[in-house]
Image 1 (cartoon, protein in one colour):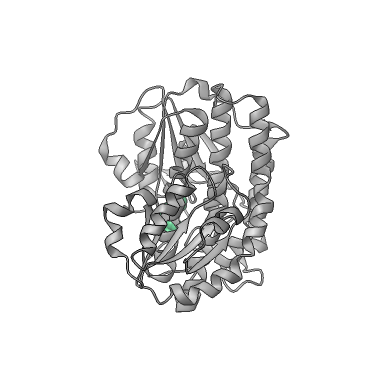
Image 2: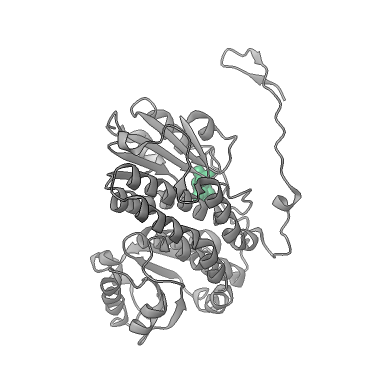
Length: 386
Ligand code: G6P
């Protein structure tokens, strides 16, 4: 390979060996890469925590003092965009830091006015997505710091950001993202906690409490993996559907959208993720007994609101799959088609846990339909064109 610059002059580049272990490129006994990558999540998330959290301290590169920033812009595409959307809830609620979230293809041409004290965070598994890279190039002329949250450390977005933060998911082969998403969420959760602490919204003790909650996530994820068989059983039902609706509130709303995206990508069934409170402004017209409605409702301060939306669906004969914890299921399982019991209740990092059944429902439905799970039609792992 020869490399040329803009003037067609040949340039030299140092050779760098990238160590790809054999385990990264075999299915490790699983039927598909996606199944392997879903199952790896407890261990890769533990890796992320080990990398960025030492005891009760968050360890990040210099230059990430959140006292200096007045606003964040988070940008990504597809699954990475939904990770940013979850993080918006965390940054705003924990750190009181205003946060904008956008898809890169819109951001790059919108000429958004950006505060010179703001930071821009590009989120990308590959670090090569053309729209996200272009958004980063726009932002770097307008903001005080650019951060690239990337899984591929040698990528263009990692190189062109002021600060690159690796998401440490390891190589993700399956086109539909799974472990890269939850690793992005974990790094973003750590950033949001750092922001909250830097800005004096939480003290040392509260930070330690939240970090303890985060450290519990790999163990809880391990329990969540046990839902695979139950999701497989439900896939017979889902694979008959033409449309599926996913509902969530708060930080679970973007997870609902990610669930719908996964189902579309893998099984080619039309699916939409909606904010539960928006149901009555349109999607309720779709409801009949043939449209499964998947409701994400941890037993927290928003539970009653989401359940009341769920009851509106049931009153129209919609068939509900309710995902909640023990308390939530005990309080609201009357008349639902099925339930999936999630671990824990009310903790801040539920979006990471709820991602797993989203992945398994899509995965098993795709297997039931016989689609190509790791290489869905018309999709690419990394989209380097517009
Ligand atoms: C493609 C992939 C998606 C991914 C998106 C963004 O559409 O199929 O799985 O979420 O690109 O990719 P990135 O590498 O920027 O995260």
